[in-house]
Structures are given as C-alpha cells and as structure tokens.
View 1: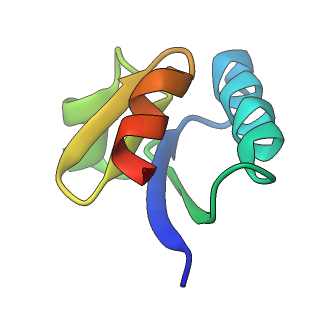
View 2: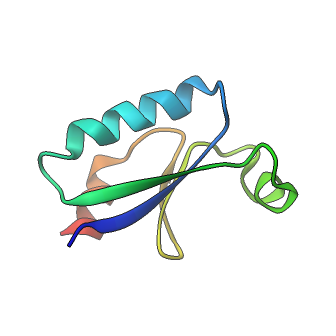
View 3: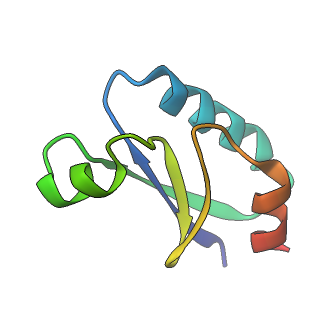
Length: 78
C-alpha cells in the first residue's frame, strides 16, 4: 500500500512545480502517493507555510521544503 505524502503548494510557484517533478522521478524507486494542498485560500495554512512552500509532509513530520531532499525522503520511506 502506498505511503501518503502531503505537498503544500502555491499556485504558480515554480519551486512547487520543480518539487512535484522531482517527486514524480522518485516514483519508480518508492511507493507513495502525493496529496497536493494549495495554501492560497486557507488562512491557517497560509500562516503556517507562506514563506516555506513547497513543503513535503509525511503524517506530522516535515520531510523537506523549497527543494526535494531525496535522502530525507528515503529515510522516511525506507
């Protein structure tokens, strides 16, 4: 069963697009699904993540932000 990861993003964010692409490239190595969550229209999420997007989360644990940290992802999914 795939691990569920959450990716907090902003619409039109090039770093978000880059992280999504990097995650797609990792799909052959790891079994995970990504739930994309735009923060733009949610005041609580905007306050929490406004300066950090994209943010990749597993459960309550932040894996990385800005850029995909493949080693951190591997530690979480291994």
